[in-house]
Length: 200
Ligand SMILES: *[C@@H]1O[C@H](CO)[C@@H](O)[C@H](O)[C@H]1NC(C)=O
Picture 1 (cartoon, helix red, strand yellow):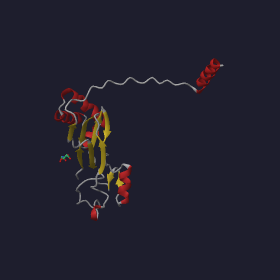
Picture 2: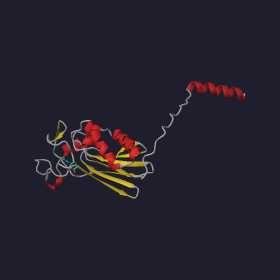
Picture 3: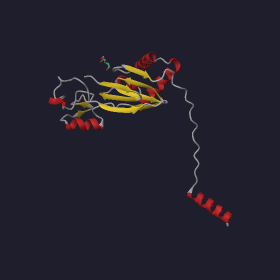
Picture 4: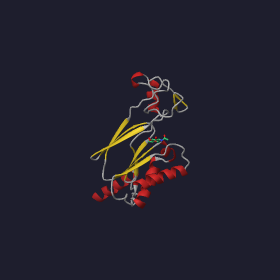
């Protein structure tokens, strides 16, 4: 079983094609944007696709055997890939595209072991902090892996970080919460009648 994804960058366009439970996450000014969806058999869309192609999901496993819904390989497994590749286990990727902006800082591409112990935003926060310290994507990958081991992840921990700028992610000054000013309908009526009385 092999999950895969491909990432293309054409000028300022980012394209991610994913099949399986790897995940690509973009950091846009500190905010995590998921550029792929994990293809777990139990997620609704995959379950519908699987059942339409004659498969079933048992306790999160495709045909009771595999914990991914899309992958390359596994031709040896009974009932996974019918003739013409139209079995419940497909190798067809889902594709997402994004126009990169000046606020896009880096992309994290990680295997399931990373995402078992990091939420996307958590990984982005972690990587961002490290890149601000040393601005070294290779060191950042190692730190993500070490942290995942510390968090007792048992799965594949391959991870790649690609930075879009030569400078480290900027320190964000947290925007002050905006003061909400509102007026009740009753207050508005009172104000209106007050203004009307001035006009008289
Ligand atoms: C972990 O994932 C990477 C990337 O998909 C792959 O090249 C490698 O073979 C995997 N390792 C294991 C032990 O499965």
